[in-house]
Image (cartoon, rainbow, N blue to C red; front, side, top):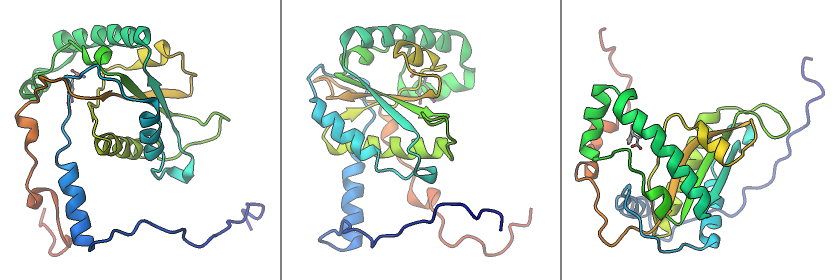
Length: 232
Ligand code: IYR
């Protein structure tokens, strides 16, 4: 009888769930058609986005599943021009180091088609920066589980919610990202995970041509693997 004093799980009937008014095939295709028009954007307009919009987007992200339902994330949403300026300044410092020294030749070659460089103007132009932190420990110092999986899932939903609201984003990962915890004065259990500017594209917005391409389904999807051994 090793775990006799554990609390007993309570169950409730499944609450009303979303049921599309078309077939699963049509609904799944429609969602794909919406999502396929998502593009990573690095040229932002300064057109404002309301705080309410950002709140609904973050609420959508928090519907993600997480290890033991700990919800080990914090979404720090920055609109203040001075804080954005500090973040841009610190990020560009890291990026200068990255592009001139830290990145390998192979990495730079892989990035070349995206046309990125150390200039991160979007960190000041975008009306909002959502800085996603993962919680290495919960605020009450209790354990978290599957931390990267949980926060990664929440970020995927965040990107879908941004797109669904008619807005654009870029998943920016300055490396190392420690400066974000400092600039935003976050506690020690919060570790920067992703920096996601949100807003509208600029009127003259351009995106890299190569990033349009998606691999064909038969390259990324396998049905019923596990027939004959591969012989290696
Ligand atoms: N963090 C750098 C470099 C960079 C790295 C990857 I992997 C990308 O997909 C894009 C950029 C930057 O933001 O420029």
